Image 1 (cartoon, rainbow, N blue to C red):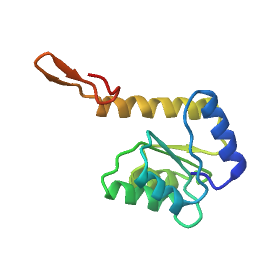
Image 2: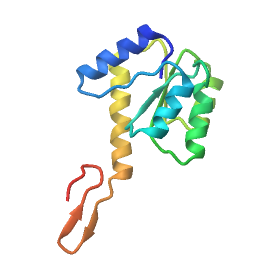
Image 3: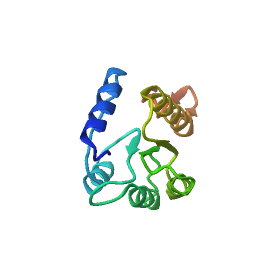
Image 4: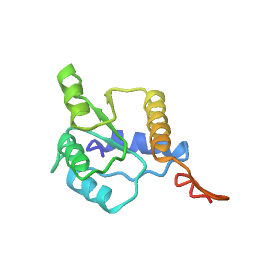
Length: 136
């Protein structure tokens, strides 16, 4: 979720070139509802958003036990801002301006960690179910 449409389009274009599916939202209330209604693998979230700020969103998600990885991407770059974002429940924090290569590397790292945490295979007799890959 990013309220600056130029930055949002830049991120969207870059991630789509890397074969990610991207859903862009420009305000916190809409984004929060989409997260509740959808199945997302990762959220890139600005702190400063209209209608509902990013810190409030991530706190509410964590309060509902929604553990989707959250990467905060924001101009708020003091140590206090970073600590507040991480303490609210964000998994990572990247300051603007940023290099797209770093954003992409952080996205991949968060996905790897998330898949490992969720990826416990279930074994029963000759059956093995992988909930991450949806394979049996």
